[in-house]
Length: 287
Image 1 (tube, rainbow, N blue to C red):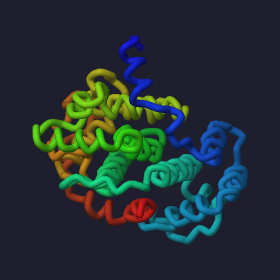
Image 2: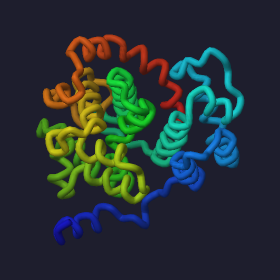
Image 3: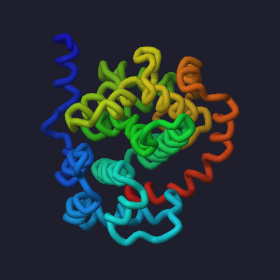
Image 4: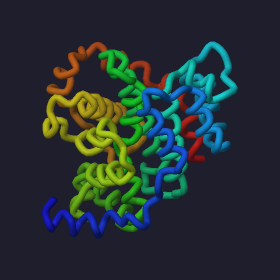
């Protein structure tokens, strides 16, 4: 990182003011990487945070996951949904909770519209992951949800500048990342990447956060390609709002890398509203 980039980072990304991940979530992330971990181990950690455990059970029993029976404990949730699904639940709920307190509005934009965009991106990423038999579809689901987290950091730490960014994007008809660079000298992708590094999130989250607008910069990375396609499709379908009203073309190289036919993308587009309705429980965590 150059001295200029260091200076921008120190001015924009004020670590002492940033929220940290809950201790329970950090323990969950550490436990998941332990091959000897059991469902009971995960239950013991999550049960120590009653609010988090309650929300995870709400998610597990929601229409989004479509279980044929009701689960009443975290251990059951792990058995029926898997370690990585419960990990994704814990991290997504925590991020929703950390950044939920905001009344940011600008014409077509609101905090809920940004979360709706992020959730739609996660859902589409998950569907693509399932299609290409990606190792853990729930991991790529969370990557999609987190891709715009840098915008939340900018709004959290530089609220007046964020409103100016929204105004510039609107009046100049430019992408929000262009407006961010004009005002701050850096865009949300880089700021989100800094947060992912500070939170010690693995590369399957940090790389899509950094490169989702420009997958050609990080070629042949499956996670980046998936989240790029999902984000672009969300913009084309106007699912939520990510800070501007511009559409975005899908990079053909990303489709080629994943070997995804256009017919599959069309099928996602035709069914996404139904999928979003099933995932409405996620948005209840920010209200």
